[in-house]
Structure formats: C-alpha cells, structure tokens
Image (cartoon, rainbow, N blue to C red; front, top):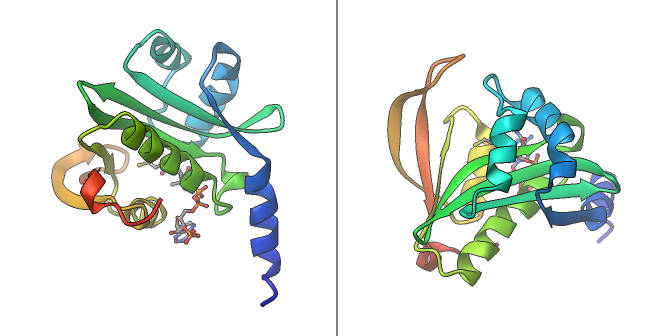
Length: 166
Ligand SMILES: CC(C)(COP(=O)(O)OP(=O)(O)OC[C@H]1O[C@@H](n2cnc3c(N)ncnc32)[C@H](O)[C@@H]1OP(=O)(O)O)[C@@H](O)C(=O)NCCC(=O)NCCS
C-alpha cells in the first residue's frame, strides 16, 4: 500500500532525529521551547540545575544542530517522575513526542524502575492519547493542579507489566 504524503514526511523527519542527553549547549533553545509550550515555563536556571542533578534523566531530540523537543524525568529511588515533555509547534505530529516518551520507557525498563508517572491536563488530548498508546494508565486526579487556566491534573502511570507498546 502506498503511504500517504504526510506519513512519508513524518517518517523522514523522525529518521533524522537524534536523541542525546541534555547539555549546557541546549539550554538557550530549551528556554525558547519551554516558553513556546507552557504558561509557566521552566527557566534557564531550573534547566541548568537538572544538569547537576544525578537523578535527572533529560533527553533532547536534535534535528541537525537544532533542538526539536525534549523530555525530562527524575529517577528517584527507582521511581520515574516525568517533569516535562515538549516538542516545538512546527515539529508536532511527526512522531517526536512518541520517540521521546518511548525513550523514557526504555530507560525505565533498562534501569528496572517500578513505575513512570506524570501529570497531564485532561484537556490535552494529544498528550493523553500519546501516553495511553504507550501503556500509561489513568490512576487518579490532582484537583486544581494547574493554573492559567485552572484545571485538574490527570495522574498517568506506566508500570512494566502493563506496557503493551513502546
Ligand atoms: C504532547 C506533545 C509532546 C506530543 O508531541 P508530538 O511530537 O506532537 O507527538 P507525536 O507526533 O509523537 O504523536 C504521538 C501521538 O499523539 C497523538 N496525537 C498527535 N497529534 C495528534 C492530534 N493532532 N490529535 C490527536 N492525537 C494526536 C497520537 O496518538 C499520536 O500517535 P500516532 O500518530 O502514532 O497515532 C506535543 O504536542 C507538545 O509539545 N505539546 C505541548 C506541550 C505539552 O502539552 N506537553 C505535555 C505535557 S504533560
């Protein structure tokens, strides 16, 4: 079957993506990415702090010399707490978020984490369906967790036995 044009484009884009550990050289672009994605973006200082944090598992998706997205998690006593996953708007829908989140799950498997958990806005249909498709299950809500606009957080958790896809 002939792939649709957008599928070809997406495949070509994701083939060019390299996942690398976050480094000092990424910080300027990561600040821009945070500002493009979130009403309360992480600052350069907060991101730099993670470079010095031995628990941090922060991965950057590079397209050539540029940051396309990133995912950050902390490994706290064998449990994974996701801080952020973000892709620049112009690169969304091409599989980069899936690569980044899949990378966190791969890390969790390799390091035998008991679980990986995150908070997400229930209204963030794209993120919720991405996490569901990778085996995250809804395990509860944190009332009024988000501001601007106020919204509950959905708690979604991946556990090794429950994973179907990666
Ligand atoms: C959430 C986010 C990281 C996803 O990144 P992405 O690169 O666009 O995601 P992908 O292209 O890998 O898509 C992964 C899945 O999301 C879902 N998805 C993607 N675009 C979608 C859309 N327009 N509508 C519905 N679902 C969609 C699909 O399930 C898709 O998988 P599939 O196409 O293989 O079936 C990105 O949208 C983003 O940066 N959003 C702003 C920041 C944010 O909300 N981060 C999450 C905080 S918890």
